[in-house]
Length: 297
Image 1 (cartoon, rainbow, N blue to C red):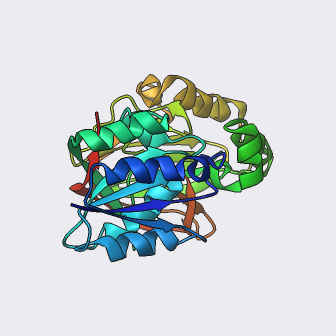
Image 2: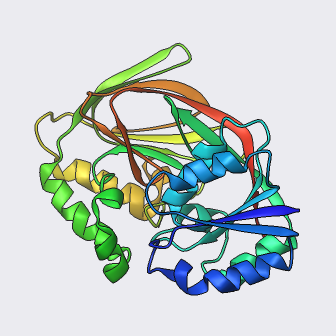
C-alpha cells in the first residue's frame, strides 16, 4: 500500500517538526511506500491531497483543523479518494476530539496502523467544502484572527483574547434561511452549522453524528439591530458552555437538522469554514453523505 504524509511544520507548537522522523519511521512499518510532503504556504495541502487521489491508498495528515480542511477540499471532487489518517497537532483539534483521536502522536499513529476506519460526511458551501463546522457572526472570527505566534504562545487562550476584541466590533445582521418550503427571517447575532461535537474547543453539539447525512444548525436571534444585547450575549455563551441543546426551548434560538438549505446574509458577512476564514456573503449548503473515510479507534 502507498501512503503520502502531508504535514504543516507551523501547526500548533511546531510538534510536527519535532516528531516528523518518528512519524515517517512508523508509517514505513505499515505501508510499502511513504512519501513526505511538507506544506510551505496556505493551499499546499489541498494541492498535495488532490494529487494523491488515484495514486495513494492513504493520506496521513499532521496539522490542525485548517490543514484537514485543505485536504478535504483537495479530495472532495475526486473519484478515487484515499483513506485519511489524522495526527492532530493544531491548537483546538475539534474534529479529532469528536472522533476521539488523541493528540498524543504515538497514540494517533497506533490508530492509523490498526487500520479501522469510519465514513464521514462532508459538506459543500458554494464552491468550497468543509467537514465539521460552518459559522458566522459573534466570536466566529476568533479562530483565524488570532495570530500563529499567539496560538503557539497561549494556545486556546489566544482565541479568547481575539474574541474579546471582536465583541466590541460586532453587530447583529439580517438573515434568511430557506429549506424545504420554509423561509425564516430576522436579525441574528450567531449562526453555527455543525457536523462535529466540538467547536472552538467547546462541546457545543453532543447530538452530532458524523455520517448520518445531516448537520445541526443553531441560529441565535435578536430584536435589536444596532448592537449586541446582554441577553443575546448570554445565549451565545450558553450555547458554547452548555451546548446548543440547552437552548432548544428558547424562543430566540432556532435549532434545525438539515441536509441542504440556502442562507442569505449581507455581502460583508464573513463565513468561517472549519475554523478558517472562508468567503463572504450568502451561500448554498449541501451535505455529501459518507464522502470520506477516516481512521478511528
